[in-house]
Amino acid sequence: MLQFEETDQTVVAAIRSALESRSPIKTQILNRSKDGRRYWLDLEIRPVFDAGGALEGFLAIETDVSEIMNAKAHAREAEAATLAQGEFLANMSHELRTPMNGVIGMLNLLMKTGLDAEQTLRASVALSSAQNLLVVLNDVLDFSKIESGQVSLETIAFRPGPLIEEVGLLLSHRAEEKDLRLHWTVARDVPTWVSGDPTRIRQVLINLVGNAIKFTDYGNVAIDVSYGALGDESQLRFEVRDTGIGLSKDAHDKIFKRFVQADATTTRRFGGTGLGLVISKNLVHLMGGEIGVRSAPGSGSTFWFSVNAPLAEAANAKDGVVSGEPIFARPLRILVADDHPVNRMIVQMFLGPGGHDVTLVVDGAQAVEAMVHKMFDVVLMDIQMPVMDGLTATQQIRAMAQPQCNVPIIALTANAMPGDRERYLAAGMNDCITKPIDQEAFLETLERVSRTGNSHVLR
Image 1 (cartoon, rainbow, N blue to C red):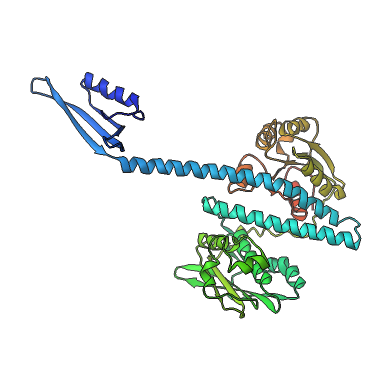
Image 2 (image 1 turned 135 degrees about the vertical axis):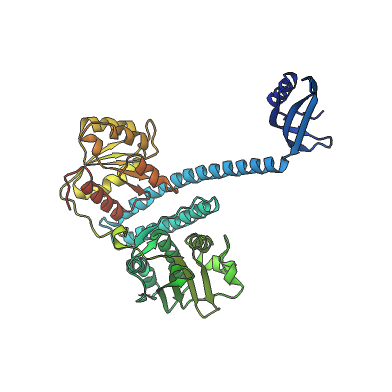
């Protein structure tokens, strides 16, 4: 009477077997009530014997555990949905970044050829558009990672001063294009070294300063950095002030909500996804801080945020700042494994001016085979390839005899999800470069890894 098509018949059979053998049993079973409601029972049945050992009957204790089982089912469904979303995001990141690598890489190379003024203008407009598209792509992917709880933070020692200078120099050309003055000030009490996630702090700063420049037609944009205690925490505090259009009181909370800008005219005039500030807000909260704004229409805006940043020792530091044009002591023998022809072409063009000896293969199996017949100074290894993927190829190279097993291997990948870099390093790779490839960072990483790995190259 209680069973229906979803009742597990193996559980029913186990209960019947226990009754026939006069044995106790504890189990869970899904049944259905007369009104059609599905419910779970936590069921314990014990035989009852008289003084002479004869069976008198059975004692059954039934507890309705439907809420608990339904909650577990919902949790499993949510976990499965999160995993599916993560896989989708990883695939989308890869599929979008791969063609963007071709577009941005080729335009950068084109800009370095002998173009006339008109051609330079057209190429620079195309490059700027591609870079803006990459910003939108990164916003969407970052927002999706935040929504699915896949954002991870690192904690390293860094210097706030150089970080602010880097952001200022990076965005100064945007300010110059609008004839704006961009300046920054680091208070004397800001420590030389603090601990935190400089990459995420830089991301929030670039968003706020970029917005300040975008919404300011004349005047200036200023960045102020200070340091102080908030309760038991030591925090870095950043303020980005502008003389732009300002915000109404109603817009103060609205702009930190997803897909929202101050009003429809803002979207039409300035564009944007409406995701930058909500991403910044979530990142700041993950770093133990707060974010807010002070503004009025026509009076400019001051966006501020704080993050936890305890004092750190310089010995543990990683600045992560690219330091000029790398110098190779001699041309390198470089193996490039990538299944995409445009990616191979871009890498080869990036390496061409250095006179490097470049061998191109299209999958991991060919990379392993090439290592058998020739010694290389460094391997640039794509991750997702047919026949054999980059991680498997890396593991096979690491299993070779000396000296091949020690060749430095750099991941060259469009995968940019949390944990990807750590996974590649754990597989035996020395470093990771994410597509679209920045030529300067690419060459700097190549020089550094080849110099410190199994290679005779010196700075």
